[in-house]
Every structure is written in structure tokens, then in C-alpha cells.
Length: 95
Image 1: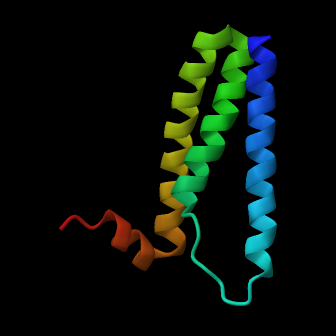
Image 2: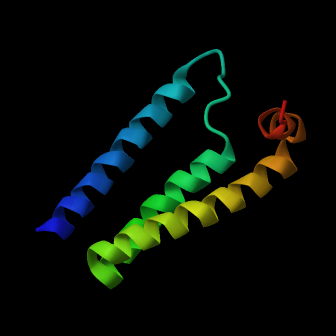
């Protein structure tokens, strides 16, 4: 039953994110939105949690979610840095 709840919560999260994505495309003025780092961390965390739940139950879901979020964030950061160096410099600058 816990696994079912986890799968349903992940499904609801994906549906909510996809509905917001369609609304954002319909706007005439384009907003910057999420960085690739944030998207990678969110997607990696979700995929890691689902994969971990399948393999190792609750403890596996937690470990998989953390590992997936870290890996997704690292990959997304590299994509941000490569595609838009100015934006990357803004959020990585330390004042």
C-alpha cells in the first residue's frame, strides 16, 4: 500500500508539472522559468525515488531520491553552464 501511495504521488507530481509547462508555452512574453540544474534535480530525484522504491522499498526510495537529485543537479548545472554562461554566472556568483 505504501508503494502504491508513492507511485500515485509521483504520478500526480508529473501531471502537475506537465500542465504548468503547457501554460507557460502559451504566454506571449517568455519567462526564464526553471534552470536546467533545477529541472535535472527534480527529475532525477523523482526517477531515483521510483527506482529505489522498486528495488529497495522505502529505504531504497529515500536513497535513490537523494542520489538521483544530486546526479540530476550536477548534469543540469553542466548544461546551464554550457548553454547560457551569463545566467550561470548570476546564480553561481557569491557576494
